[in-house]
Length: 161
Image (cartoon, rainbow, N blue to C red; front, side, top):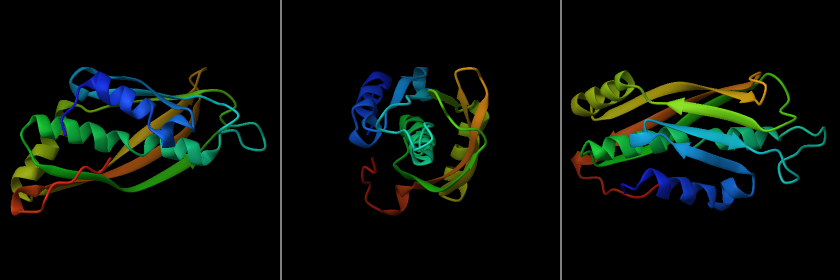
């Protein structure tokens, strides 16, 4: 489903798995070329040592590459299924305050996905993310592998989010 940047922002901000973990979409970049996300440290996501629970950090990174590629490729006319195939996280420093990350989809990334959709019918690739604190210190790195399948072979499209 193609939606506006504002509609998807508010839909995700109010989506209970993100809302209750205090994961906040600050904004989707124009044309879904990126997203800025804030993980607010709160009573709901604090672990015993006062830092943000690692599962919250991990959950915060889950949907965004898939959502960006979904919106971008649908706007290119593709009927697709997109999901996060795998992910890996490395915690480098406790998040004792709010955490932040930005994802950007470049022209090269989109072109590579379109080329794969047109030739092999699917696209699988891992992309890195860096989660920082308010001082800009790196607190975690994540690799998210997305899977995009072109549904031109008759598979029925479903909304996965």
